[in-house]
Length: 547
Image 1 (tube, rainbow, N blue to C red):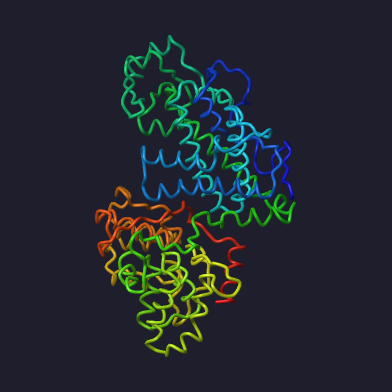
Image 2: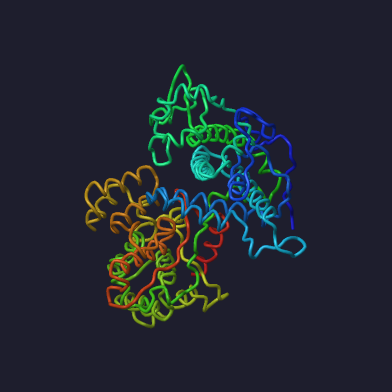
């Protein structure tokens, strides 16, 4: 297996970020306190990614590490899109980080086959974090849009970790010392002189002023006011003689700004070297170029009759679910089928695989399509021209491969609909006037709500427009207990699953036909939002040729 080795050398992908000093040396001004236990683990998660890692990776490891971090960054974007904040945001992000960027100490063994020590676990976590960052930095440096997306999500991840460290004794100070970030510490005499002014500044974790008891142990730093503009704008720092007096707990804003500036510069540097780096290997180059297009969610490829709990999706109840729980792309295919009593090739493929992933069995799928097609043709014609294709989708004909439903970006990037076609993404393929009229006809929200959807279309955020559609038609879904919203905007089946779980939760755990239902599992997300890889498009072409 080919290995990918990176020597510790000047970084063509933008390493060696200058942050005002070199880590490692003792620095009296930042304290340099040693951190242990949980604080040490938090500090290990924090890094300015100044140097390239030197460990060799196989191509499989290279891709696995990149996709693992991509899932975390896309989860960040998904949570922001759903307006998840506060403790719910922190808990969900921590869960995702633990699942994808941390090794499972219970199941992972050392080279000798023994249990990993705490130090070995932290070392492997550190390796995964640094390696995955640099792989994605290389993949996302190519265009301005990719750089902007990567920078936004990485800064959010860094801030999340930094805020956790600020709440752990010694962890933030130890990180500042290690990173070589030198801030002038306010001496006891000056701190006593400014006691009243500093006590009046909202510096507590909840925005409250520092209490007199906390003030005794609170550490303050004096930084040039231009480095603390965010804090000053929010009245969270005292300013005197051109310097901002910042408590340790509020130093996060300044450190984040330095991280963003350094990473932005590194991405620009990396973009100029991308062709050279990608051209060094015929196998690494395509991986980097397609990384932002990888779909990282659930593929819904395996037919599962339990998707709707006690009630199975059947030819008889598809109409009900189409009206209530299907995304716009699939409801348009359903409407076109009911109106024309047929679907052209790409429409049959897109809708047929969606229904398979939603839980429609092969027998029910044959019955459903025969019932509609039978209104314009004989049963013999249907069996001769279409039944084979349906059986093939379920892996019962041909090479007996079970094909997966289309994810959102495969639909967005796929063949656009022509005359008489109903497939594709309405947010991508309909013009603004047609889409606006359709939303109004379907009575989707208020005029202001529909305008928000159209604004996302104008900005080419087609999947975010789909997310907005879901939010409008499922009020307070994010706060509805039992509703699983993962993957909305990334996959039509995730949208359907989220809608089903929402309505079940609202109905007290029962479907509209009084049967128990459970939500599907769904996958995390991504980005404007996720896209299909070239390899997936190639597989799609093979699939289409057969069907």
